[in-house]
Amino acid sequence: MKSDAYEKIKQSYLDKKELIKSRLREFKDVFKKGDDRRIFEELVFCILTAGASAKMGLKSVDAVRDILIEGSEDGIYSRLKHIHMYPGRANYIVHTREYLKREYDFKLKELISSFQDSIERRDFFATNKDIKGLGYKEASHFLRNIGFSGYAILDKHILRSLYEFGVIDNPKPPSTKRKYIEIENRLKGFAKEIGIDFDELDLLLWSEKTGEILK
Image (cartoon, rainbow, N blue to C red):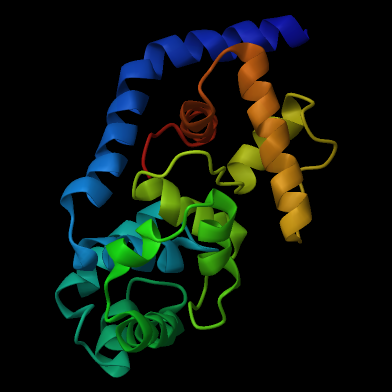
């Protein structure tokens, strides 16, 4: 039974391989070719996706893109209130934006590049009280979406997949950093076992549950 499931996921990978690789190249281009404003847009996407959905996050970013850098909390809220289930996250966006302007002159690419350690880089976004609305999952999501590899986005779809494959004993979301890294390492071990690149496997498992290769 286990071998059948493995063969099925390997075949699915072959079918979707080029699309997945293309998406990962797009992520890398965000950091390589994008400016600080573009990086912040991805951060906002992850703030708006947490506890909602990628589609809702995309739609919401489209609605506020032109006022992200200078818009008021009320202005952002008024645009989110008809399309997002948590329009109050306008507060998260503005608080985070003003913190990054005040402390880092909004030089996000320079800030992110300053971290030599991948865990420290994620910790900065996951545990910083002035970066609102991100935990380990969405901090990982943000960094993956701007082209940094080695981070698992442990959302309900990935956790359910890992549970079904017997990689984890419970699909419950990890509640601590230690538990998050433990499951992430199990996913890395699983990727090695079935011979699929770790970052590609994360996207593959998500697409198996949702039918899409988004971000």
